[in-house]
Length: 606
Image (cartoon, rainbow, N blue to C red; front, side, top):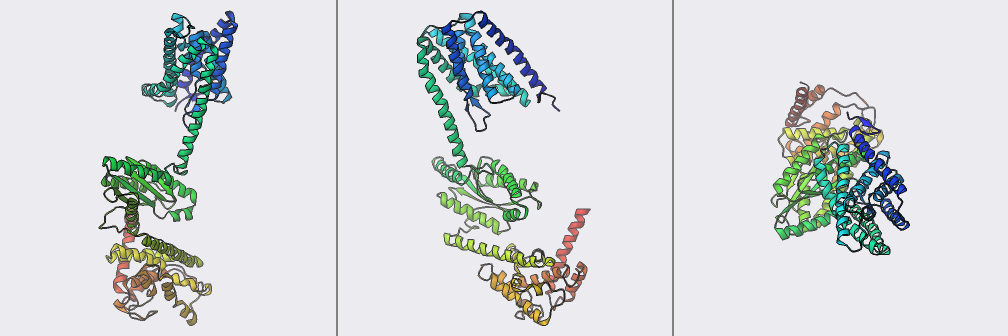
C-alpha cells in the first residue's frame, strides 16, 4: 500500500517539497535584491506591465482537451522576454507569482499551487542564465538579443519539462525515462513557437515599447480563437458521438463508410462491414430496466471498440456497425472473439448477452454503400433467422437479399408476430397457475424435435408453435380459465373452439406451417380429438408434438382444481395413452429428452 502525505504519495510529496525548498529562497532573494537595488521607474513600470500580461495569460489558458487536463498559455512569451531584458531577479518572481495567483484563483489545491509556483520560478531562473554570463540585452534589432532569447527559451523548456515529468513519473509510479521523451516532443512544438514570439516581443520592446501592443493584441486574440476552435471541435465530435457508449453515431458511420469506400477504390484494399444486433435486448430492458440494458450496451461497445483495425458505431437501440480494414476471414475471427468474451460476463440476472452479426466485404460483395449495407443486412437477417448468437459472412448462395417491398413485408410480419407473442403472455398471465405454461411447452416441443432428428428450421417452428398454441384462449372468459372444478359440457364446448380462434389470429402472419399446427394441436392419434377429428399421420407432426408437450406440462403443473402430478406419473399417463391419444414415437422422444435433462443435472452435481 502506497504511503501518503497530505493525500499524495510520499515520494511525490518529497519531490514537491524539494522543488519548493529550492524555489522559495530564490524568489525571496530576488525580492530582497529588488528592494536593495530598486530599478528605475521606467524599468519598474515595464516589469509591472509584463507581469500584468503574464498574469492575464495564465488566468485564461487555452485548454487542449475538453476536461482541462492539458492547457497552454502564452505566459512564457513575457517571462522569457523579461528574463533576457531585465534579468533573473525580475523574471523569477514574475513567473512564480503570476502562476501562483492563477492557481489560487482556480482553487487547484495546495500541493499543485506550491509545485507550479516553484516550478515556473525555477524555469524563469533557467531562462535568465544566459544573462548571468553576458549581461542583459537591450539593444534594438541586435542578433545578440535574439540569440539570447532563443537560448533562454530553450533552457526554460528544459527546466519546465524536467520538473513536470518528474512529478508525473512519481504521481503515476512510472519510469522517468518513459515520460521524458514524449514530454519533450509534446511541449517542444508549442515552446518553439513561443521562443520566436519571445524574441519578437523583446525586439519590439527595445525598439519602441508601444510596439509591443501590436504583438499582444494578436496574441490574446489567438488564444480566444483557439478556445473557440476547441469548443467547435468538441461540438462537432459530440454531434457524431453516441452519448451512452462513446462510439460514433449514425451520422459518423455514414461519413466513415463513404471515406472507406473512397480509400478502397483508390488503393484497391478491401474492407468489411459488420452489422450487429443484440439478441433479445428488448426483453432485457423490459424485464430488468434500462440501467441493466445500458450496462450491457456499454460492455458490448468496449469489446467492439477493441476490434483490430476496426471503427465501431452505434445507430441507436441495440444496433451497431463496425468497419474493419481486413479480409472477411480475419474479421470473422475478431467477431468470434467478441462473442466468446460476451459469453464470459453476465450483464443481467439472466446471464451474458449474445449478438447476431452479418458481414459483407467491399468491393467483393457490393459496388457502392447502399448495396454493401443491404448485403450485410441480409447476412445479419440470416444469422437471426437461424438461431441467433451466430455470425454469417454474406454469400449469394446462402443469403437472399430482399427487395424494399419484401423488407417492408418482413417488418410487418415481425410486428404482427411480436403482437401475437404479447397476446400469449397476456393469456398466461390471466391465470397465475399457467404463468409460464407456453414457455415450458415451447421448450419441451423443441426438445422432442431434437430427439426426433428434425432439421433446425422445423425446430425453430416448433419453438414458436409452443409459444402460440394457446393464443386462441384470449377469447375465453376468466370464469372458464380459472374454474376451480371440472368444466361443464357447455363450458368445454367453448374451450374446444380455442384452436380455431388461435389459427385465425395467426393466419396471415406468414409463419406457415405454425398456424396449421395451432389449429390441430388437440387432434388425437385415434381420431377422437378436435376440431376436425384427424387421426394418425393425417395429423401434422408439429401438432402431435405440441399435444404431447402440452399434456405433460398440464399434468406436472398446479391447477385450480388439483395439485401438480409427479413427472413419473405424467410419463406413465402418456405411455398408457400412446397409440390412442398420443403418437407413440413422440411420447418416446419426450421420455428421451427428459432423461437427458436428468442425466445432465446428475453430471453437473457429480
